Length: 83
Image 1 (cartoon, rainbow, N blue to C red):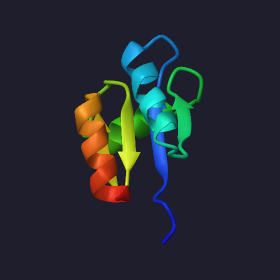
Image 2: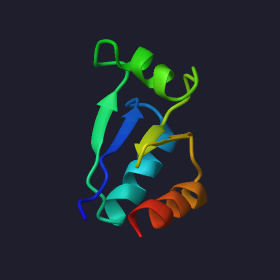
Image 3: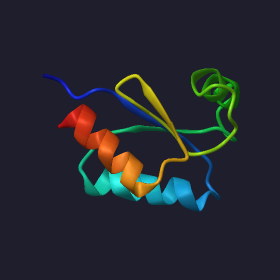
């Protein structure tokens, strides 16, 4: 079964974004990163997916939007969705 697509909406200055990206990389999870300050329309798209929140990172994983997840929350979602 193919791995679900993972999309991380981030900013360059956000320490939580860096932490979540490190965790995804350490787990070997391929993901698409979208910097909401550099990609036109990305912030609006992110807000549309996460209930209007401007918080980053917002990580889409298997159809679920994780808004500013802790490492524990992200790990649990990865385990649940990716196995």
